[in-house]
Image 1 (cartoon, rainbow, N blue to C red):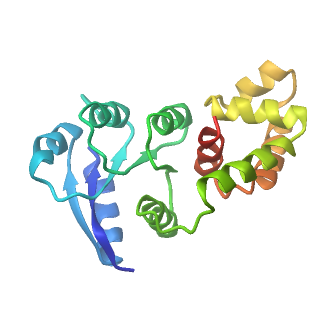
Image 2 (image 1 turned 180 degrees about the vertical axis):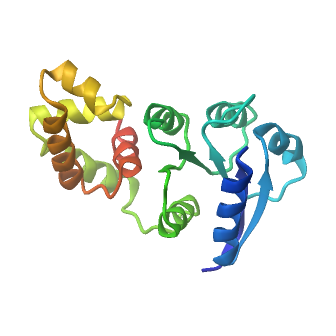
Length: 200
């Protein structure tokens, strides 16, 4: 796969940064790495436009704060956020701020390449109006309980919190989540959140 748009990779974890950079370069993707969001922002004025891939949890300037700063500076570069287990609320906050996708660790090479393809607008999509209508139809197919679980997921709540709020068991929440994913035709949580936010 050849990717014309370079990737600007930001992660304070050197081993994780080097590992991902190696994975991307093996797929013929040009990668520039930065040890912090601050280092990236300093270099930003002279950078070649590309896709930003950033870890969500970093000292000083977090991935979320970086997204907000880029928005404030009207920097229109696609951003992909990498999250660890338990960072889903932060990832959803990032999506509300306009990031293209979020990826949960550990992730496969296929998953990161899929996110980069999405960032480049390479995925075939329905025209916006048709796509919105299709998503609305899928939402309408959900039962009341499935919609309540979906609302909790999009709010960034873990299963235990959703279960407590709805008076059901965490295992039951998992079953409803699985049904929602199938009915919404979402391959992963990021896709599900993106769909719901697109019609709000």
